[in-house]
Image: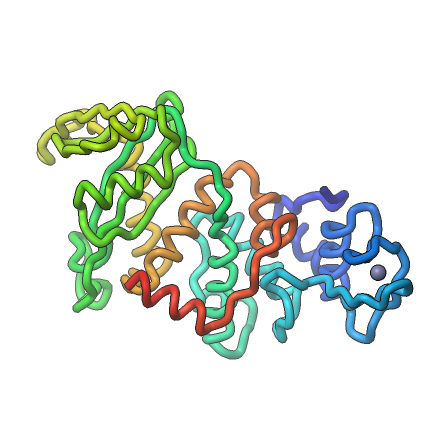
Length: 315
Ligand SMILES: [Zn+2]
């Protein structure tokens, strides 16, 4: 897609994207790898308009912005900061909290850092994504609320726990791609709907316990329920019925508490999306970085109102 190599270290990153000009240059190389072309008439010649990144076609006068259709459009925040945030989000397994971002980038106001992270998170939801397939483990967990092992102020007082369903592709002993979703309850209807939206028919679904998933078979799935050993036996090393799902849930819980000190139920789905995004692209940081900046696919910019609305629907 572009001749720019993906930086392997923070130092390389700083050198490559030291200025807003360098970021603009990168965006235009990603967007027009063969050089600028008018999106309306295809003419390759245009005037640069005042600000960097705006072009006017010499043939049809159509105006194009380098950032239109991406989360960077009309931003008042320097591109260098956006690039830095997207890089940290895709390469640091722990992700970034708004407070950390604010401190690391020297952003004056916490809300700006928070808003940047949330816009980047919204770019992580890829609606056209491929459903999971093959052997798939499904499990559910409670997130938030009273958590074992946390004391005092780290305990999420008064926060309602949320029910989360997790699906993990089994690739031998390793995990393939995952999906996570906040669900209202653990009814058959809810579970079946999640599975049908996220897993290809013909796949084999593994669950613990003796949950009934009637309806799955009619929808073309095979269901393999396994009895989960007692917790005490699990601690002694008995193999879990759904080991990969258990591991994904453990990593999720550790990340939510470690990086974000817990997340309110209202915003939980976007954090799940971030976790899933990074997990599924852990071997393709370059593609992840470009996706976040809205390159390659056009994602609509999201307003604060829309983010809050979406969050409220979840909560
Ligand atoms: Zn044109």
